Length: 346
Image 1: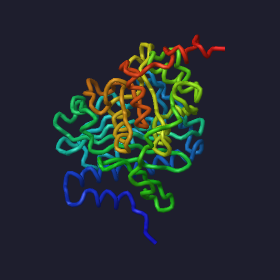
Image 2 (image 1 turned 90 degrees about the vertical axis):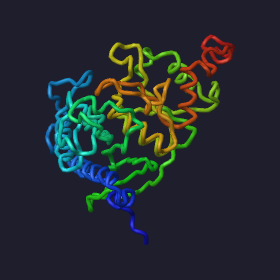
Image 3 (image 1 turned 180 degrees about the vertical axis):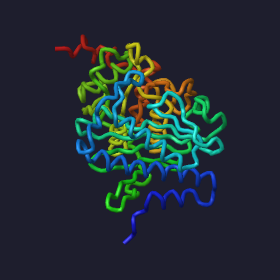
Image 4 (image 1 turned 60 degrees about the vertical axis):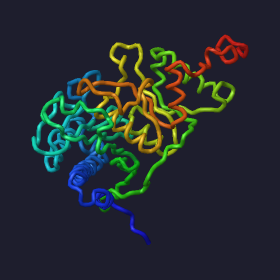
């Protein structure tokens, strides 16, 4: 019987004897150790205290939870044991310098979806590993496009604890063996199906969407009688890592577009430590990640906590939405046959 490959074994084989890769491997192993700690803590629920309690501080438009602070501090502590020059986080206004001469930078969303914790819903941690190019304790060091990523991924803390990872050699999914406290490779070289019949979007914001997004969703809702010619299901958890994980498992499209609201004109997800690692994972699995107008991984960041729209998942669906934004796709709602006041309105 073939023994399943551990995360450490996978990374060791990938790194070989190359020092640059070994540094990345050591950093991911340190993140994995923190992920195991979080999994155990979150599994305690209320027995660990009121983890969902608000701290009274807001991070931009989001309310900070006590668990956000706990996970942030533990990751920073874990990175002190890795070859990491500095850490940036959603929970910190500025980066923290750890070792100016170390070769790597790490940016994190310590606990994505923390607002779901009191509802016992799945949540996660998102991370990206970047090369340290100088000025490592400053915000400017992290202002690198996503194509510069050396590794990226996320943890999902749910019925199983999983680590979705790419070091630029495809997307791999590791599952935590709780007894052995080790991540094991369970889904190598994940491939997202090109087509899908599921979309994930926060429908409560529909009145704020631009025409392209509204048209796409309306066309999906019309099902097989509409211009898309098939029925769709909608899924939405409020936690991007969970929605993207589902897309990796069975295909789909995730949309968090910019909209007409002042705080969300540029989307909601942070480019550097949320959208970029998620886009990296999706592309490495054969999907596409776009803002609606350009490839996410090619956007040059202008600020550490910059927000950006994200449309990601199955190739054909994302391409369709991009064509709608560019005006190259016939808009179903503009067609007399399918419009609300068209020939088929009864």
